[in-house]
Image (cartoon, rainbow, N blue to C red):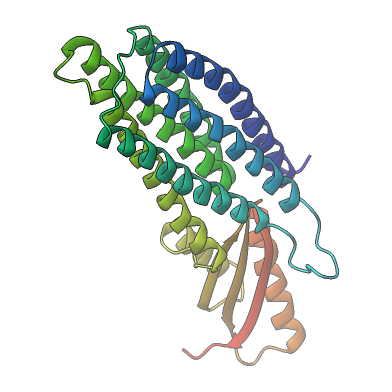
Length: 295
């Protein structure tokens, strides 16, 4: 299995792990929220349930992105992974707004309930498990350059924060009744804001990728230095690196001695392409343009 295929396989395993973990957590949270009379915990359970849809969306995106180029898609299907991340982000914004509206309505109508203490145990367990899933998926997503997996990871992190809000809100009600009777619903509002913020953050990131924002900074400089290390390359005039799903595409303009033949220039360009492809297994294509060195 090559590096890129292995990356897709790891991404799929991580997504399925998220589905299993969220099914388990959703059940615990719904039971704790319903029998413990906690609006914040029920909101948190809905959030965990939405994580299942998030992970399934990531799975679909990874599956489509893995397809080979065809006549209608000569550049491949890699951006399906970024589209999946954007769908997850849009859903998060919608979910956060829905939960916020329902909690705000209950506060205005003074529909308070008295949550049970064992809701706190469910919230604490969720924080630990969700943070562990976040750490795993976030590190894997960065390693294999998966935007949708990183979006899914942040979904777990936002769920951990929302469970923390539940812990604080329910704890305030249990300890400070009746003075803090609205704290549970305020916790639900906090959950909604966390979900919405996470969605907006990921929506901006995936939108940049879909609009072919170029990669700059140390990663781009390393590519420039590698190209310049190829014998015959005098200078890198232009370099455009863009992300397409788990893959990257490079357009690079190199300058060579003006007296070289077409064949010699072509051979240098081929050497640059091989050098870059061998150095980074996530590169899908490298387009090298040869120009005369201008000094």
